[in-house]
Structure formats: C-alpha cells, structure tokens
Image (tube, rainbow, N blue to C red; front, side):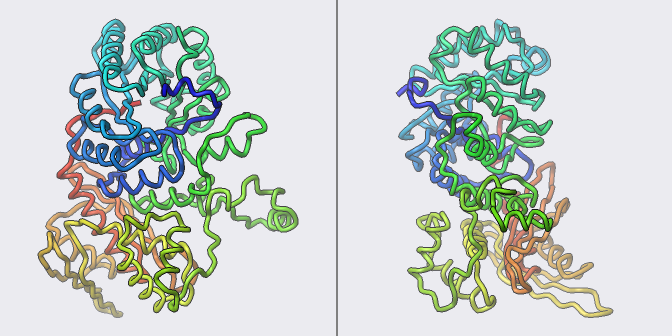
Length: 519
C-alpha cells in the first residue's frame, strides 16, 4: 500500500537510532546489539526503522539485512545517496523484509552544492530524479530527503520535491540538518511546500530535526502543525553533534497536548522506558538525570511545596504518569527462593526478549545476586541481563580480577583475560585500584587508548546496590564507550573498559568505507 494513501490521520514515527543515532561519538553497535534495539523498536510500535546505510560498510549491510529478515511490523529501510552502488546496495539489503523501503537523499542548499557536492542545481535535480526512478523499479516505499532543506532556496526546494514525487517518491522529508531553524520558520516551510509542490497531497511530509539550538522537538511539533505526518527521531535523542529529535519527547508531547495538537502517534508508550534503558546499556551512555521523560529526575519532586501538591493531587505538578512510559515501580520483585519460571515471567513483563537471552545463565547470575543483595529490584534485573548480553561474542573477556590496597602501599591489580579465547594475565600498580586494574587490562590488550570519561552510578539504593560504570576511550581517532554493571564497583569499572575495548575492536574491523551524514 502506498503510505500516502492511508486514510487514518496520525503521526508516523520514523526511528533512525540505528543509522543517524549511531553516528554520534561512542555510539557504535555490533549486529546483535542492533537487532536487540530493532526488536525493542518493534515492541514500541514505531512505523519505520532506518536500519543503517548499506553502502557505508559490509558490517552495516549485514546488520540491515538481518534486521530486515527479523522485523515484521515496521517498514525497514536503508539510507542511500543518489549513486548507483548506494541504491543497489540498499535495495539488496532490505529485499527480504516483509515491508522494505529505501531512503534516498541529496543536499539542496546552495552552501552544500558549492562546498560539498560541487554540483549545480540542475545536476542535483537530475541525480535525485534518476535515483528515485531507479528505486521505483524495485519497490514502492521510497522516501526522498532534501538534505539541509532548512537552508535551501524554497523555490528550488519546491521544484526538486515536485520532481521526486513525479519520479515515484511517496514520502518527502525536509530536514533541518544543521539544527539551524526555529519553529515558526520551519513550520512555515512545510506550509509553503504543501501549497507549491505539485501533487503535495499525494505524499506524506516528514520532518527530521537536529538539536544544535535545542529546538529539535519544538521544530518537529511546528512541522506537524503545518501538515507533516512523519517525525524522524531517535531513542534518547542521540545523534550527531547535539543529537536528533528525541522519540520519547515528541511522542509524549503529542500524547500530553492532544488537546492542542489534535493528533497522536501509534507508539506503545509503556515501552519507552525499556527502550531508553536498553539503548543506554548498549552504547554505554547514561541518560542525564534531568533528561525529559526518561531521566531519573523526570518524576522526582524535592521542593516541599511540590511534594505537598503531588501528595494531595498528582496533576498539580505531574502532567504525565510514570506508568505511562513504563517506568518500573522499583518494588521488590523476586528473591533467592524465586523459581526460573517466575524469573522468565518477570523478564517478559520488563519488555525483554527472552528468545535473545541465555536465560539459564541469566537465572544463575540472578541467584548469585540474590545472595549478595537483600533486595532485588526491577532495575537490578535489567542491568544484570543486559550485562550478560553485552558479552556474547567478545574478543576480550574478563576472567578474573584481584586487587589489593593498603595505607602506604601502592594499589595493585592482577587481571586475567581471555583474548580471542586465549588466557593472559598481567599485574600493575596505579593511583587507586581502578587505575591499577585499567593499566593491567590495557597491558594485556596491547594498546594505550586515552580515557576521556569515567562515571559511576548506583542503579538502586543501598550500599549493596549494583554499580553502573560508563567510560569513553579514544584511540587512533576512534571514540567508543563502554559500560559495566556489578555489585563490586571495581569489577564494574573493569567490565566497562573491557566492553569499550571490544567496541574499539569492532570499529577497527568494520570501519565505514563511505562517509555520509544523511539528513
């Protein structure tokens, strides 16, 4: 079915976490991690998953292909430039998807034409028309993006959009690629295009905004008010530079202010928190406490007058309920006497895909955690399972860690790791037991990356809480993040570094062959 001919009026959610989101520093994912995110996006009930940029690398092609074969609900598509190889690679990657699509883009602003493409407007018009027509020979779902639309001449933009529609595109995207637009201006551009583009009523108009000036969500809502019916966004708002439109923010804005906007998405909002948590675990980037919707402080009230108001009537200070986005109740859910069936049932309730988890191993780790902690919470279980799934096919694996520290004696660490299944041990001293552990790990790894960020977070309360450590390392121009969770903070720190080293190994072997920012 042509998506533009669907009669129900709702805002389609196009998720680009796996493509534009992965372009943010340190957010590289392997194939299995991308599949885990894709499955969660399907549980969220997004309309479109942009699975990657097929022509950029063999690894990206493989991940798109496997996503296309795994996901049955949303449209799965690949990004492509207006080049023959890009188009063919993208079509091949999604050909086995139940609902395949392609996303073709080319820049339309004069600044991009002159300084990036070295093309005339006529060249760009011809390239866009040719690419859409070629793709149309193989599938129906074709999105065309005019990169840097917000800085393009509106007359030329109307012309190229008209020609893309004539060639067969059924979704037209007007990106604010650099985050330059403000809401009134961006919304007015959609109104102009819908008035001046030929057959504008035959397509879905889409908005893709970046957050450089902090206006991505506001610009997206302005686009909706002016006829856009698709928003391109990412979980937690990750993406290049300051990020993309945040999926959770735009979806909950539509839901909370339906009285004003008069329209909603079809997203299952109760899967939002699980999606946010999963992505944070996968890419090793914690969600800021003050992040709207999913941050730890989003539903916290510390001021006395706020607490009093909420206790009397929640809506005095809460415009949304935590349950609406699936935030766990943080209650005691299971204990050391709980059985395997109860454990699996709880995993399902938390939105985890038990078919993609080694349940027996996870249950064993859960039992071990119960012996260490008096109280086990939902967040503990999420961290435990996601810690297990992080190490399914790693080059580096932490086997043992022993540390000693005393007053007047330099802290020491002895680390045993498996490197491509071969066991190696190293010792080191350092300025603290974490520093000593890191030096021993890097001695085994044989590299010396720069540690750019190290942060520690307690997942739940109490001195026996699981600790979550995030680190960001840079080596040979590549930046990757790592994350680890353990009741021992030194062990969590070691796991985070090992996780980062594995990501670094992955990027070294699957570095993109072609760079493109897309829209």
